[in-house]
Image (cartoon, rainbow, N blue to C red; front, top):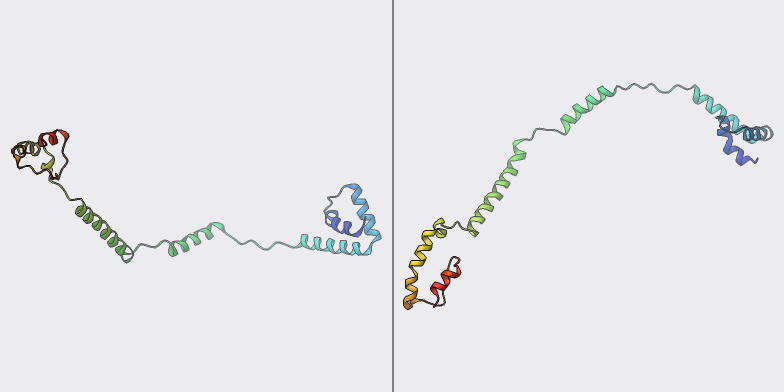
Length: 156
């Protein structure tokens, strides 16, 4: 084995993860090569040092931290909506709705309900006598729809 291969396998050698044949070859190379042996000794010391060191104390209570964060979020994000926040929005909405209804009434006026009633149609049939007497102007227009029967009664 060469030095490059052994230096790549030193960590697995220390962790005892090599099979017997590879372990024997790495050990033979470590006895014969001083440079690789030095790297092996340094890694061995580092591993022992890390195994003996104690992890830092974990001083954390997740439930109390959660309650503290909830209190902080409650005061920062969720606030009561104030009148100065909603009043302009309400006034703009009311103005838009009233403008809509006013324009609808202007563009589409409310018609008299009697114009579509049967009594108004009867008065139309009574007024056809005026047309039959010859005072009928052929260039006229109706303000309301006319059925074919009504038109045939008017036209000669």
